[in-house]
Image 1 (cartoon, one colour):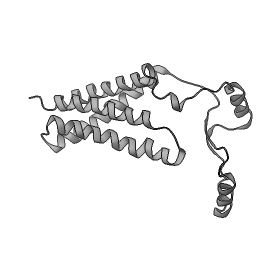
Image 2 (cartoon, one colour):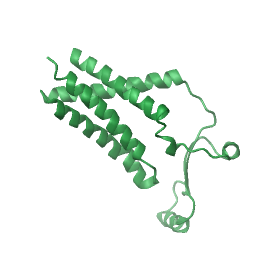
Image 3 (cartoon, one colour):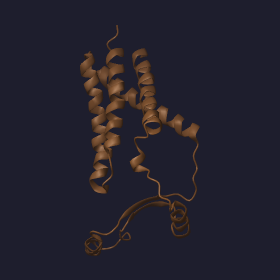
Image 4 (cartoon, helix red, strand yellow):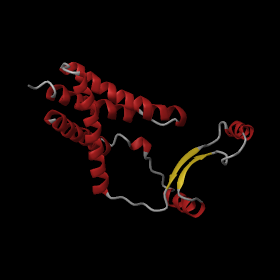
Length: 179
């Protein structure tokens, strides 16, 4: 139980620290949060004309026929499109968000440590590679799959997952092989 808990806590902290570095010091995720000098006017327009929610433009109302959807898609080819995540009020609790983030990271690593311990004795390299595989699975099944449809930039996410899970793998490879 001690190996499981210490492995998870330290691994979760490593994930959290790398996320902090990548989002702040390295600013790797800037391509997904670009600035526009028109942001005040855009936000005012959205506030006056939209309800809170997630939007994909252009799209059709729910219940519209397949044929109407096909027609809209054909008419929209080569024209602008957007995704909008709209909220009526910016609310953020940095301590709460950071607390939730580290708890999720510890829980995630706890699940990985539990799986690794169920497999049995593994070498440093096997544990390291297994953790890298976890990072790649997460990337391929989330960021990359999303990018296929919505043409997002995912190189920062790939780096994020490979480095963070590489750090966790190095830690767990050493920790789980201690006597």
